[in-house]
Length: 454
Image (cartoon, rainbow, N blue to C red; front, side, top):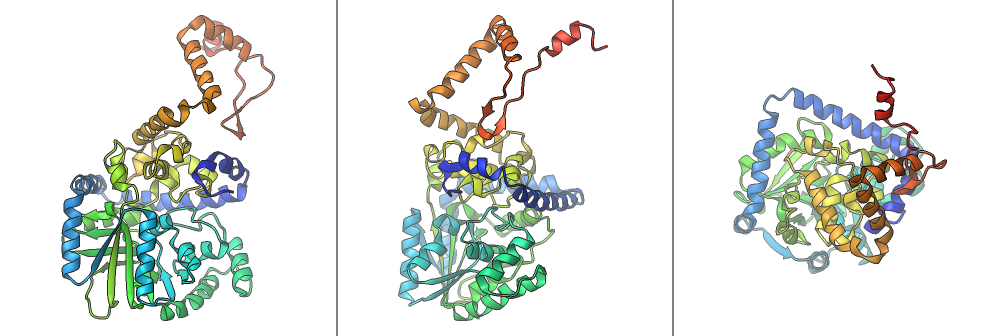
């Protein structure tokens, strides 16, 4: 499977044949949704929290530069450093410069989707800087040489047997399917890496403009070890992650763990402040643009309100059939189908917005009320107005033109329906894994007129 947005059709054709993958995904996502729904049912103020969270995120985006400036002033006043990065290449270069300036040789890295955008671990290892993912799921993916398939559960596509075999082959440990023992192998390996590391790299779930703090949410305590033990801590975050105040952050934290993993509270929440005794010698925040301001100026700006909970992936029927790798991009599912073309150009991911049933389940579950179906349709429009006007799509355009003609003329429709009902074969539609159903020889209206329904 090729990990590129342009390969989404071929990837889905392949992944739809993998029934083990579908079983793994369905089991994991349904379990999370059930826990989330139970928490929602027990919280009478859930919708009020969503309204407040939605308003807060949009306030941040509508006054982004003001809140970023406030955060930078507060953060630097406390002794931290802020670095602005315009592009992915710019961010990589600046992170590498910091590590080299500190003579860093070993890096421990916490789970972060922004650093996945940078492919940072791969980049640093190629520069002879030993870099290890410390989140258990990310560690498994790194050993497998794969990309994460879910934004909150990177190894969701693997079952216990597959993980056991992977650790046995890559680490030389005895084969076991005991989760506690498997976790212990990873913990034992990574413990020394924490102690050896010169630099720790994390993301940032939120950055608070009011206090200059970086918020990190986790369940394994690996982030705390990655950000406190090394001499240098670099937090890489998108510019859209700023929130105005502690009150805004507190309300978002009512929704994030529940939406992401079905937990009332996350295992660990760190509000990191530079200059605190016992912390790293240097704390640096990289504020990444990489297409975010471009998207903010577009009609799809509300997508930047996303808090990366992954709930829309869990309920999406398309994601649950094909998995995250099929999208060929860092961000899969409904949110990824908007972010992937939105952060670059629609032509770089021409088919992502069409990987949706538009059922609206993602809109209902989104904790910050992003109108995902509306944004998906807008993205489709962008693609059609650019990529789909080329000669390469003449056949598809001809089909839809014919369909439009037929639907506007009942006589033509009846003739084509009569012929269509007598075609003996089923045609492929969209991919080799999907076929159009045969047309019924008699319409429902004909059957009613014949008196078959009382």
